[in-house]
Image (cartoon, rainbow, N blue to C red; front, side):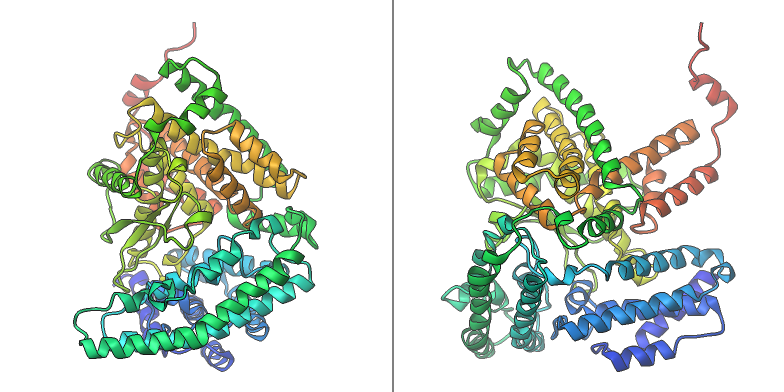
Length: 615
């Protein structure tokens, strides 16, 4: 057995010994004091185990998604005391990691150490900023996560339904804790921009219709398995409906009333994060965390301007190729408004997404030596969130939880869902984008479970955007409109670099950002408005896509130039994805080592492919 396999066996044994209960202060203290002290090579995996267990038991919703046992009857404790306790525990984990002599670790553990230390350090640095006081935005929060978690829970047996009911019984506490954090945020002037909150109350009230059978919270009770007797089904449904009417509706209704009467009227009118207390430093931290780079907002803004200019030139070439008589503005208006580019029904839109996904799947072996075993599906974004949700998103699956990955496509407002964007969107969200990368990471049995959880935005979204360029290799973008659509999506992410930094750092107003977006892309106004409001409540996150893509493209160009005829696209992709998601600085070092290990092309090949001498 290799050293790495011995460490992995030790890790799995320690994980199995943990009880599947909440990690309170006493449980954490006992586990921390039991960490090995003699050997660095044993202490590191034990710390990883403790961090993994801490994440799963501190955040039960995440445990549900991952298939980690024993947490499905709980929600996160979001009381101030619990938040402060988790912060203190994270600091202790960081201190213990710092005390490991990294030079004493074998090569197989160096990456594990680097990732654990970097992640804990980033988390601790973030504690100086009050992100927890903004628990609800129009794109995130319990009004979105709770129904998704409930609908991801196992529901095959009566015991599963008992667990689900136990979780529902605890939901009013989570709602009350969320409202308490929002009140504290109001007092400290820490809220999302007021303009972005206009749909929040509707989202909350959509969870509590008059009929419990129609509530997204109780979807599991409308779709019960046939192995349960009719009498048992009725009994479970009656318990759920009584709980809904007596406890859930009052809790959510109170939250909605608070949002309408108190929160929105007193929310911050200024849109920039830099306008908040210590906001410039807060934004700089979010930029570093999301991009895993040391680039300043001003540097990123300049990169964005250059990318917009470059992509705009490519788009102008496509317009000329179509023979369209008119300028860029007229062409994009044509794409936004002509009926030929839009489906007439939600089902037709969804069916085409599924057909595109199927075509892509058959071409993937040419680009990848290793493909994930976990399947995925294509589903519409739920109605309770579709109006203010983005064009699409991906929800990871889990083999442990028995759940496939899902590419959620927005079928709301069909005149804002053009056909020419569908291929690029499918490549990004499904295969070879998010599903391929995330499912492969989940299936990396040779790495610690903690690393399989990693979702570094710059890597994950950078890979998704890089994958859009692989559409050409997959036989997509064959007509100029789809090709323009692919460029529109690349432009979309370049524009983000400009408007995100513009609004949060450089004094841009919201209308200026919308206008800049509309001037440089063909995306419909509805999508553009939703996007701009997303950047307002999620500062810095949107920067990761383009910066991650640029890094991956640069690494590929370096490999192609260095290896010449020895370059193999399948090996490049397999290596890039083979360690799971990584920060960009660590990814670059890993790929540089891989390039060095492949060897230079032969002298004969180099001479044949080299350009002729000048003159």
